[in-house]
Image 1 (cartoon, rainbow, N blue to C red):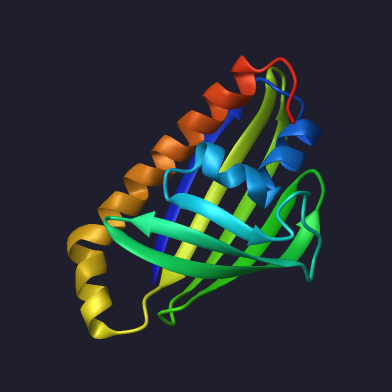
Image 2 (cartoon, rainbow, N blue to C red):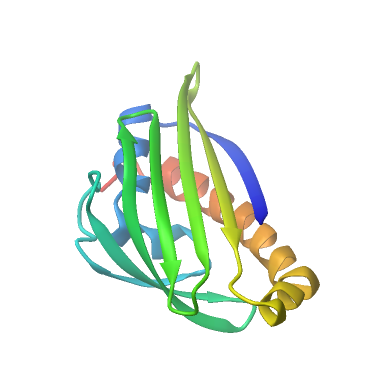
Length: 151
């Protein structure tokens, strides 16, 4: 099991940040691994809703089906993912109010389905995922702080 956790402060109200990041159609705008999202991706998802995300990590293309497990707007959102290759992941978004806006924490916990992928994860994938997670939050901050209004 691998755990990657990052946080960043965003100068926008917590409700707007929450709605933006929990709308899967927005993910390709800020997460480098997110290529596209299919399904009910045009709104902030509720528990029980699911989407399919096409991803690219360290040259590996895949598909993950995400199911919303928990939502406590605007503070917490948890999704569970199952990859076509059999891998599993959980992403937790935790948001707290900050005097200058919002503190956003993103935690990714994942397992790989076999020994070969475990070796690749240890050698290549994990470091790429960590770098992508840092870049994702920096992109999100730039995107949300540069636009006067969040769509």
